[in-house]
Image (cartoon, rainbow, N blue to C red; front, side, top):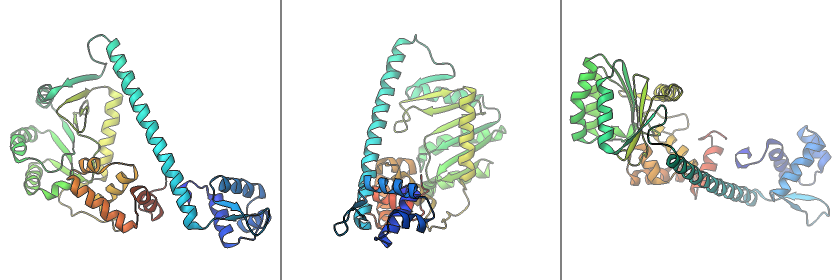
Amino acid sequence: MLTALGLDAVSDAVYRSMLAHPQEGVRALAARLGTTETAISHALNTLSELSLLRPSGEHEGMLRAVSPDIGMEILMARQQEELAAHQLRIEASRAAAAQLIAEYADLRPSGTYPGIEQLNGIDQIRDCLTRLTRDLREEVMTFAPDGGQKPEHIEAARPLNRDLLERGVRMRTIYLESVRNSPHTVAYLNWLAELGGRVRLVPSLPTRMILFDRSTAVIPVNSDDTAAGAVVLTGQGTLTALCALFEQVWEGAQPLGEAPGVSDLDLSAQEQSVIDLLSKGHTDDTIAKRLGVSPRTARRLASDLMERLGARSRFEAGVRAVQQGWLPTR
């Protein structure tokens, strides 16, 4: 189906039929496809607007379908233009939103929004996390998107985690699958599991997040610089949504002790995540951060998948991924 390239189902069917039966007119096409002549006429108009039909040089007044190799290039170029225009609109919206937020912040008296506390700098973040951890009673849920952990960070975390688990606090943490490449991190996670902590792995995570007793969330303001600042969220609606997000990711995550699986499409979960991120226009650096791997590894994964798809560009890779069932049609 060419719906992934912007054609509706009827136009797709008409284009294919005209390639196979170039002499047929509106009435014959309607009979062959089991639809109305009006629907065929609308489809012909659509195909003409997309330059997939051209006047016949042999039969005056008739239209002919352009060859698929030319037609697909036309559709893909059109989608690429639409994607670029959409990206520009997003950037313009983001800039306008940032300006509005800045202007509104200047107008507000000093203080914080209801349900939101702003933390500036690593010292405020650490003080807040220490207070929230001290007051923990039931459960802490964490997105840990940094990949392999530094040995000094692991050693600093051990006493705190041991204390929480001995106090009966339930601990659930979702790490990236890339931690499997870090032996000391895997050893730490196994130690954590032995004490009663629960750990699962996913190919990518949207951001760092810690949920305390389902009543408070701490999220960095900038995922690329988590030490620069963070927000503490306590609004009931916001917490309900964030807890639901965590549960959804947790249900789809893989327990630490299980071997990485491969889908029916012969793709690992990490490869599936790379395809999804590529289709959304993310750069190698962004993909690397989301997967917790180096930019070089992200480039290698992307190149290998493009080669498997026979794609010459990342846009073409997204189109081919949809065509081959690697991604759902949108």
